[in-house]
Length: 323
Ligand code: NDP
Image (cartoon, rainbow, N blue to C red; front, side, top):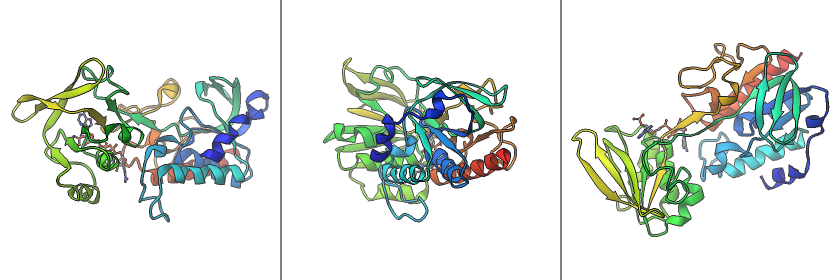
């Protein structure tokens, strides 16, 4: 990422010229950059609009063990490699976000927050998703000062403290593993009688029997505090309906994600859960020339490797369209 960030000084000339860019990719996670790789290798001018978090969600993954061909690397290292690889092939980066799109005409029009408008012949949407919130009292008040969705970012704040995690998926386990060297005690609240996390992920928790506890059929109802710091949670057992106060110093949310599709809802068909609908077995949308890659259309797998694969597929479809 260091190298990629040095490109901040570069503002793509495409952003200011009237010529349409053949291939514009919105988003710079594994999906966006894998698509860019294929665009550039086909010698098609490819511009990536990075969004406000270059590298996307994987940047927050401390240890990734399921990226094919790599035994273990941090998410940031993987994304560094992808930025370097795409940059070396001539992909251009614009460190900006898209404010609005007009897909009703060709070339398509993309308005950026800071760099004016861009015309595009083909667009790949790879905007990913963002963490879901509980929407309970106290969550907003203590957001960033006791409530977080990123253990890798905030774990050092919890040295010797008691923390809770909400969620029963792989993210909940991953959050616990990040917190392990710091927190004194970690309690994972799972609303069902079982976790959804992969068995091999759950096994990792068994290595720390004194430190981690999983509490099932329990929902967090309120974040409690003194107005400045979190002091506890009001929790409810959804079987017995019994409520209690559970003292903690911090709460981490690991309850899934919402797709970043707000910009596109007027133009593209969205499913009831707001993910973009694809034409069957393709990465195409109902608009020729608009393609989709990664988590923004994937409510099922949500894996970096899958995102990269769909990025490649979207790029191949876009190249076919451009031809
Ligand atoms: P998931 O959707 O897999 O899991 C979300 C969890 O949060 C579920 O246990 C769900 O419960 C729970 N939940 C949702 N809403 C609430 C709520 N309001 N209150 C309480 N609990 C709630 O999301 P993840 O982020 O864990 O994972 C997303 C994808 O990323 C998955 O495919 C996962 O495999 C992958 N991943 C892989 C990793 C790795 O391999 N290293 C690391 C992290 C993620 P319920 O089951 O009841 O719906």
